[in-house]
Length: 571
Image (cartoon, rainbow, N blue to C red):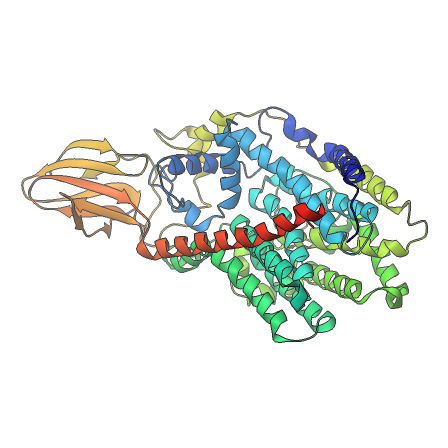
């Protein structure tokens, strides 16, 4: 084994760390301006507030939040990706306010996504070219749209996992018996990164997974000896990743039949034109039907240049590329081709055919795939004349053409209270809350109409409610007295996990009219009625499976970490 000079190793890494930090400044500086800017998805700040409340009340994993929909609550994290909010909650527990916790997560997405793209590209090209590809990945205009126009927290964080998943595929797709320990470690990394993507943004996971499978199968078929071990490694990684995240995606799929099928946006209204992809327009408006969007779908000058040059160099130097580079480039081109096609209105028949695809709502979401795939063509630049200086020119072109996009339209300096007043209607709904109308929430199927105002936590049309004792933000104990029996309503949407007890005895719950609220029948006399939200037995089983597989994956990664300390490098 080659002896590593730790002194030079540390100096070299410090140099790359300082350089990378300086290159991040144009993308991240706006995140350090106090307060929050005018991103369209600023509701995530209120959702973090809800996440914090239910975690503090002991609901782990979080599923049903207490305050949305005029206090009727909502099974928000049963359907909405939870991982970004877990990560933001760490910052909140460390003392950051809600706004700064979200912005800290936004910031973290930039270096981490760049690091993993760098490490992925480093399997094929030099450090300098890999760094230029990582910078191109960070500064793609759509990344700024997500950060400073939309504030799309799930997509923002998902960019961390895309290159890490592909890096895992590269490491795992050529199995040899002599590398079994290293393979097991990368199974853990691959499973954790796949689960991370599912828990971060299920739409991106659904989009990316078929293409990752294609890449893996191409590498197995053309690079590896085709034996059953390669397929065992493939399916073991995928299966473990799905099990780690099963506590989320299994209930999200099964419980979807308890919600009304509707979406706020019709995908047919949001196909960008080809001209919008290549025209250097930048704006802070919305996506609207037709070609007059205020939002930009521009691929980026540097991105288009790298794509054109990369395709040209691929054709010219095809015979000189190694087999693994050829597979990578062909796969990246397939990703870009299908992403552009699915963003075009001519693909409408696929949008109407492929299951769940209409839930994407916006065909331009496939810019996620082009954002990831185009920097891969940097690997062709090692055949470019003056290759020594090529990374400098790529980085310079990227920063000068895209760096100016990375800022919000306005620094509104909004604090936590602005978002709580706007989106949290407890203890009462503000005028701003009435304007939001919560049309983004799919109603439970038993709900005939949305609540239109704040209602008492507990109400009845007969009998007497003596006392309402709040156990926590979700649960309550109610003391009642009725001469002829009563129908008692608790102002929360009925959903699996809610139980009611009368004098410590379980009692049936029905969905009341018209809101689908929790409703129980109370017999004559004085009684104590409890309303509690708990994890169902089936979900407890899924929780145990997810936790167990998560710990197994960490144990597998630990072995790679231990060996890396011996040789001085992890990757």
